[in-house]
Amino acid sequence: MRIKSLTARVLLLTTVWSTVALVVIGLLISTLYRKSAERGFQDLLRAQLYNVINSVTIGDQGALSGSPQLGDLRFAQPKTGWYWVVEPLGTYTTAPLVSPSLGSALIPVPSVVEAPFDKNYERYYQVTDASGNRVQVAETEVVLDTDGRAARVRVTGNVDVVEDDVRTFSHSLYLALAGFGVGSLIVNALAILYGLKPLDKARAALERIRAGESEQLKGDFPREILPLANEVNALIDSNRRIVERARMQVGNLAHSLKTPIAVLLNEARVLEKSHGELVRSQAESMQGQVQSYLNRARIAAQRESVLARTDAEPALERLVRVMRRLNVDTEFDLVVSPPHLAVAMEQQDLEETVGNLLENAARFARSKVRLSAVEAGEDVRGAEASARRHWVELAVEDDGPGLEPDQIREALKRGRRLDESKPGTGLGLSIVTEISSEYQGRLELSRGEWGGLKAKLILPGITKDVA
Image 1 (cartoon, rainbow, N blue to C red):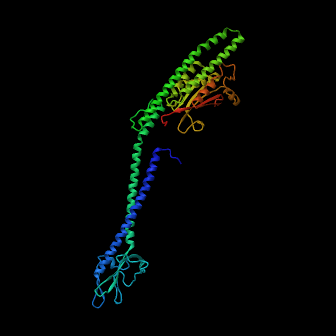
Image 2 (image 1 turned 90 degrees about the horizontal axis):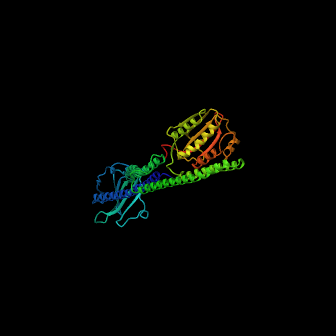
């Protein structure tokens, strides 16, 4: 699975690396300590071996004598695994000397082939004593007098001492490394979060731009992010200039076409009825087409701008106020929730779309029209909605006769008028559809709860928590 968070990526990499490094370091230190402990254990046995040799002699009668004092009580306690033995070697016979800890027990002795002597005529090997202890044996053979009488000397030590020492050290080492690792991860995480904090500031600045609270990325950014902030600001300025230039060109074009179309309409009035009606209808159609395409060109020039923002409540209140004056016999209700709701559209586009819907509703309503603007729910956002975008639902509903499903399909066709007795050009709903689609929104028609037509617009919105 691909990790999209930069912080999570860095933390994961540092965690994996720290874990692997600490495990390798722990195993390496533990192995080195084990080797050192085993070498020290062998050196101790060798020292004890020569202490025994220095404490033993052969008397005049050929008997071994001596009482080695090795300074370790374990040589006096039975079944400890710490023993020493001095045995006669050669043709003379005498009783061997043994440590009190060994008593009458015997120590298994491998052959010279299995455990050969080294260049110092010493050999070291491990066996298991009669008590089940695993012991390390240091053995050598020495001549004790001028007559050439010799003895074999062995000193043993319990290997569990080394194992316990290594185990205790390893436990302490792993605890220390684990504590160091956790502390390092915490410090790394804090360092990473602190290092990436300027990116959060940049994100917050972009939020303010999308929310319409700012027009540029503002903040004290570090050297690594400052070029990016400058480029974003330059892009926003360029986008703003393109929008203004497109608006100016659209205005000039509309102004240049307005007069010729008006002349055609005036001339149509003085022509014969049949010809005049044809010219008038074609001029009106041309006027509607020109206005529609001018709107589309203007919207296309600025729809991607992050600065497009209109507060819904004041804009819709102005429209409702105008409609009340023009339709004194119709009751108009306005509902906006939440009050700070904003639409990611230019104000004139929002007013044109909603104004067309209100005009249609007022034309067919019996007594009342309701306009509502709310945040869109999950069930109405549709395929256009992304997980990171907010959407607004604008609904205009009247108590008129309404439309059947087949009539709704006809009504959405450009220039189609279902009721020729009512004034209009039949372009209103198609204009609404075109404008809303340019903003990646959509128009839906259905029968409302009052029995009349309900026109619902799904448009991109802006809220304070946009990221």
